[in-house]
Image (cartoon, rainbow, N blue to C red; front, side):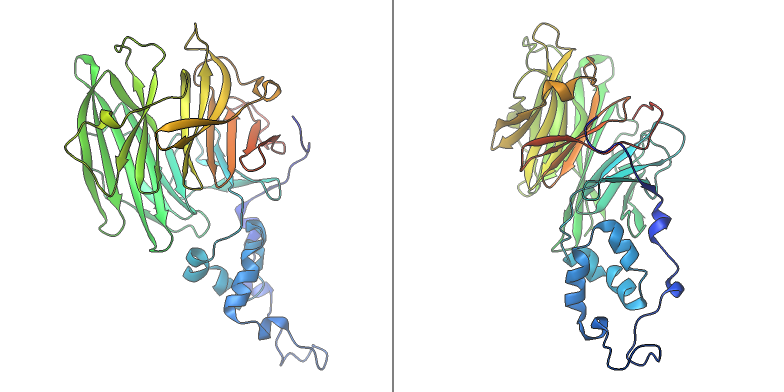
Length: 386
């Protein structure tokens, strides 16, 4: 693997020091030299907020332990919501074991941290994030859904979504409106019609934090298509990746994207009328919102063996057309395996993370620089299923 061979691993508690261990410098402090003025005393809160916001996230934790004033600023609603931190997105991964803990990677400091998300009981829960908030859902009944802030550890359980429990496939997405301090959660459920493999019931439910209620926006029986486990919200639109059940007479068209507008909410037409075909035969696809653009990372299928992956590509959606951004170079693709569903992928802002199941290697693609790069060595030494 390219990059550094060493790694630093810190628990979250590493950054939270007892506040009583520090004192703010005061102009009345007898230990200070005469004439010394603390810059902390002359900076207004808004300027100090701005300065602190440019620190890496790990350093912000440490800064909050300097004095009570800094602690109050870092933990204030104004700082958490209004200040847009110039950070690169962290990558969080689970290892497949009984623990719900995992590891987070900071691409700025190139360090790994052991990290726990609030509310999660098992490592196979669904996860979606937006602007620092994380939405999680259990993998059993798909009815236990929480929204949490992993930094402040605040969390809230959403009311149970309506409709069928224990669906065959589910997808989860959250979108945060930073200006209005609100968020929407989208959940897509897919369940096979009893005794009929070709017909699948698809429902899309929307939760609004303002009303604290779920709304069943779409409920339709699809012929020849079923839902999957990938959806994303981008610019007020829900995008869901669906899969062909093999009756369309076209083996190349195995994946498609359906579109649901949260503003217009057209209830009278079939959702399949919005179908956007995949850019090429895919083995799997991962959806993400990068700077208000829908981006898909997909496994490229062999022409004569659609269940075998021959490469990994990245595409960006422009209206109803996919445009290829990059293909993973062969030297990076080696080791990902040949089965159809062999990697996890997520991203935010301008970074795309791709990780092979069963491997500890994490590959990062920078959309702005068009550059592939391995992360620093992952702290997981055993080859867990990730």
